[in-house]
Length: 160
Picture 1 (cartoon, helix red, strand yellow):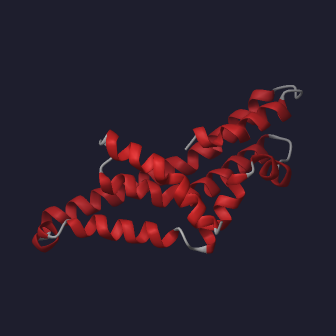
Picture 2 (cartoon, rainbow, N blue to C red; picture 1 turned 90 degrees about the vertical axis):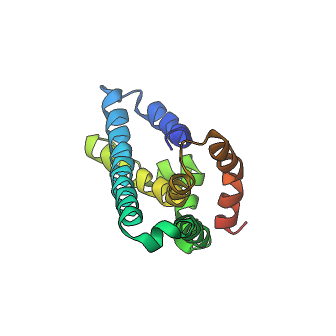
């Protein structure tokens, strides 16, 4: 999800360019952002491992493994209409507004800005990531289909 954060990163680069060490603010922002997504990736990996274990040790689930994808789609689809999704998308939709609201100078505020943006970005996209896991991230065709319909999900979640 880093590419979708590039407008905010550009604003941070521009705002920090006159500081003595501009790369420090930029790096702390990126580290905070990456920490959020790394924790999510680890949790998703553990959940995926648990699902695979359940499928291999529970015969009924093995015979009805299609239910896993159906449940993932149902959860992801339902999340698109929750106010939490709307709030996260609203925060990510306007990088300049996000920046002016939460930016403070310094290393610690840069870290917190990265964490905050990472959390809002994760809140916007976690359901799509689980759909990607459910479909099978190795399929370039399904990834292209999901990429093409993702803006529709954003509009559905935003109430537009």
